[in-house]
Length: 66
Image (cartoon, rainbow, N blue to C red):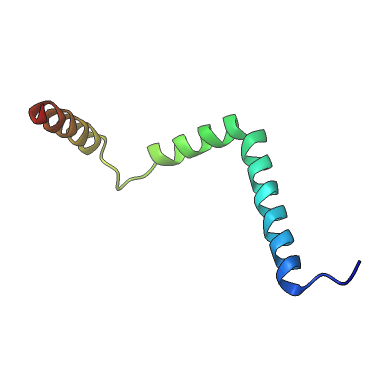
């Protein structure tokens, strides 16, 4: 076995980091979902009425296309 090249080592490191991130996302999914939801709710710039208007506009546009 020869020495691994720099590109091969970098690829292995990036793959290991991606695998680790994915494992953490899966392990803590319920906690992260609650955290992200609470962050979305606490955004002062976000207006819930705009979300409702966007949803109703999209539904109206979809029904008018058919």
